Length: 408
Image 1: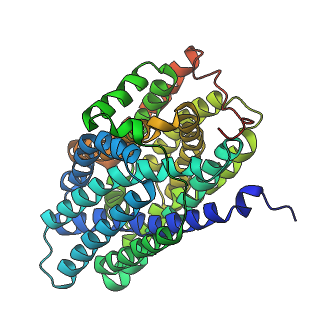
Image 2: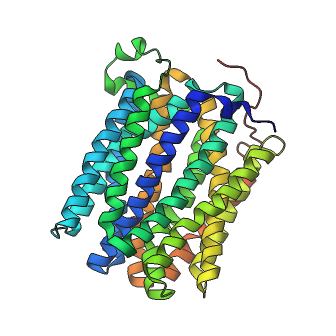
């Protein structure tokens, strides 16, 4: 049986394994945060505050995180942020176990962990081109995305199980263990250091401005970011999922865990599809079609009258999201020079991570007066409109991710 060369890369395999295990804890804890907040307050608006606190950290600190990803040893930076988040999750677990937990504790933990992520994720993604040849970069992201979705599948399902059996503290302690795994993996992983001499000669603020200046003149990347935002700002399904599970579908914590994990099942299918068709079909057309279908699936989830239909809608969201995400991530990494990759990745992260956070607040607030079904249905229309606008132009529609470049 032929084993792809990417899977014979020991350094990539070690890194991949550590990232997946850390993501299981992170994704499960986010689901637990949403459920815990809704359980304490009974309010979709207050549950949406989790997204607001995420967004504050991501939008304010992401450019700084990207600048430091280009100035520091990226492996050490990721390791330090993982250790910091370990301590935050440990504090959240202990306050829950002792019974003194209040909504503001959850919001503070979200703020601190999201702040750490703004430094962690640009460095984490910028490490990948140092581990694999450029010709395998699309395949690396096509593999990392379903691996991430496996984590999002296992994490929420594990979270639902642990919440039902032990309360949210069970998931928070599992998160502590997952952070510890990646900290240890990074200690033994050897990654070639990027050149930081030119970057360090300038101030951090100058480095940040360089990232913005480069991005401002790259309309392709800006349009890809715009398509991403159309999905995340308006198709923010996560924040209304507790209300849909408890008040509309009446399936409780276990059903909530299944619904939270369903997008990852779809994402595994979507990642397998994009892995195969990205070599032949126009990458831009894949992005536009799957963006529109993301909106359709979001409306399907909102309008589902029974639990099975909701699971299928949620799986569709994950499938189409995985397909356009793999191409967008690969395009950003391939189009950006290594010297500023961390900074540009962090700016892209404002959309890819800050968008869902702001979307949670957006749809959570809209769900207050309209209800979760109407709010999510209206939001699902926007990605369809954005994709239609993309097809009207040629820049994204005709884009093809390079497939056969040598290591540079």
